[in-house]
Amino acid sequence: DAGITQSPRHKVTETGTPVTLRCHQTENHRYMYWYRQDPGHGLRLIHYSYGVKDTDKGEVSDGYSVSRSKTEDFLLTLESATSSQTSVYFCAISDPQAGVNEQFFGPGTRLTVL
Amino acid sequence: AQKITQTQPGMFVQEKEAVTLDCTYDTSDQSYGLFWYKQPSSGEMIFLIYQGSYDEQNATEGRYSLNFQKARKSANLVISASQLGDSAMYFCAMRGMIYNQGGKLIFGQGTELSVKP
Image: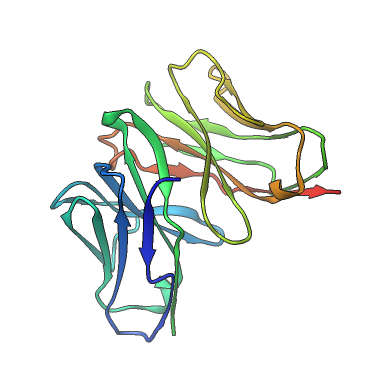
C-alpha cells in the first residue's frame, strides 16, 4: 500500500473556526491532491500540488487554501469553516511523469462543521 | 468537458459468480487514463485497476479485469468469482492530461455491489 496518512481522521468544529487538515506521504510522489466526497456529487477536486510551493485550484476551491512546504506534506486549510464544508476529505498522490499513473488515496478525514 | 457515467446505482450478485459493472466516459483528450476504485463501508478508497488509452490489451489485476472498448467509450469492470468481501461501492474514474488541473480524476456516481451468500 502507498504510504499516505491523513490527520486528524475525524474532527468536529464550529462555524467560523479555522481548520487545517494534513496529508503526509512517504512515496516521494510529485503530485498531491485534495478531494471532497459528498452524497450525490462523488469526489471533487479542491486543490492540487505539482511540487513544493507549486499549487493550483480545483473545481471546488472556494473557502479553501493549501500549502506545500515539503514534498511529503500537503495541508488543506478552511479559513473560516461553514456547514457546507461538512464532508469527507481525501488526499491522493500520484506521479504520472515518473510512470506512476495511479492515484493512491489516504484513509480520509471526516469533518463536521456545526 | 470530461464526464463519467455509471448507470447502475446498485447491483446484486451471487457469491462465486462473475459480475460486470458498467462505465462509459466522454472526453476530447487523445491521451487519458481510466480507473476503478472500491470503497467499502469503512470508507477508504482502494485502487483496483488502471487502463491507459493507448494500451491495446485489457488491464487485469487478479480477479479484476477492465473491459476497454475505446470506440464505444466504455470501461467496464469485471469481477470474477465474487466474494462476500467484494460488497462495496465501486467508482469508475478518468484522468485527463496533466495540464488539466494536474491530471485530476473525474469520478462517476458509483455502483453499490452486494454479494449474496
